[in-house]
Image (cartoon, rainbow, N blue to C red; front, side, top):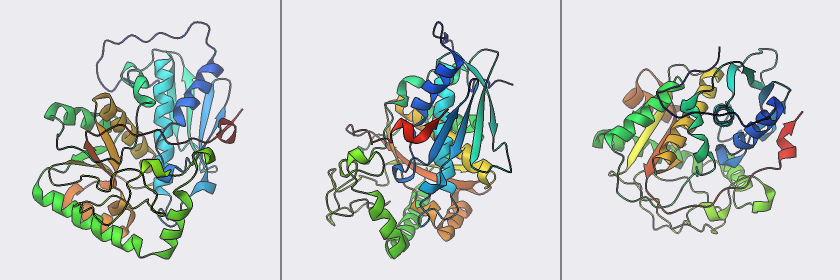
Length: 338
């Protein structure tokens, strides 16, 4: 069965003339690799067949200290999967998605099979913002999304089988702030975490992955954010202003799923990217604040105090900010076969 539109739209989608299935799948990979990933680790591989695309996890790029169970690795692959779905819809192709299809091959996270039928126009309209989406760690201003925009972001998560919980009250904000501070302090006290962070930060753009200095705030001790950004400035070379501007007036969202297995992690990555693209399309910037979901104790407290019957998978901040540069990407030949 081909995917159905997540919302009504009048946008017509036309298939490029004389485009082969293989060309469409190859173009989908070019969109998939623009997805966000933990520390820009890009833990994915793709195999292009004549009529389908295999989306695989590359566990050699697992950040074991920050992400012991591999949850954020799978989530990153889910974000790439969503970009591929968007690209195929925009090029006029309908797809059937089989997630986690082979217990004997756990690295095969999804297969996108081209099928007869109309493309999903609700996904197609997002293709134009895939390349515009950025993880923006700049200072946000004090504006907040409208109720209609928040409903749009929430609907995007629901369309992917997830839940989006806005942090609305002062008490809820204080909970997220306290748990983020606690988790951040525990991570900063872990030598293995610090060593892993150092390996993936301050990379030269030519290396094609990791966090470059131009994309992170300079840490000089002057920031006093309620909800601290992760300190990526491991060498003092960060180019952005010290403060992220995260205060009680800013919008925080918690993305969650009903279950907490690999299939749910994959869907949470698809939901995350769907939400991020809707945020981008609406003219907002976003960045993750994930420390509180990376420490088991603080994650459980966040669930008990805010998301209740859903497992928190990520925390986002939303605001308006100046532009930020694109992060580097690996060579296509390193991630694509077939």
